[in-house]
Length: 144
Image 1 (cartoon, rainbow, N blue to C red):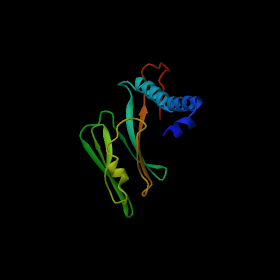
Image 2 (image 1 turned 135 degrees about the horizontal axis):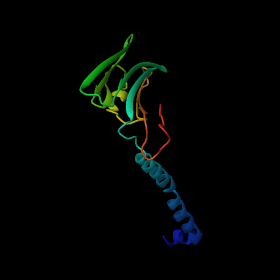
Image 3 (image 1 turned 120 degrees about the vertical axis):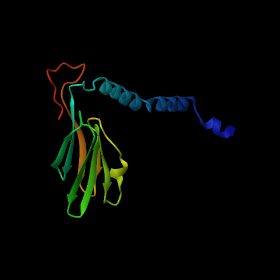
Image 4 (image 1 turned 180 degrees about the vertical axis):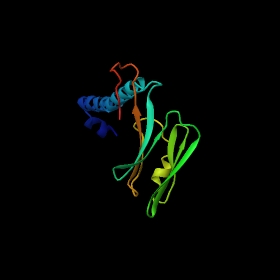
């Protein structure tokens, strides 16, 4: 054991400590960016919309802001199908005949920028926001 301790030099310890501290830098940066993004969340005049695209082409759009109840829409492309359910201001793929079921396991989404992707069917659900953002008086910044 003493043989191994003789191989460790004081400068080695300094390097290890600096690397450990440096490994937390991305965490600090991303945590700060997330906090800034949360602070700039849209106010009540923002409108959230779920946009469903297949192979890059829009096939369905539903406004989530103010949506009440449950709306079910079935995407069908020959033998491929996905059942898309909107409940209140959240949307999800409830059922699909794809083999991996990743899109179904994703669950409900409701915030701008969130997505659900069904790769086998080339289907994408994305939440988009249109409206003003708080703390940023840009004269009606539109995000879409």
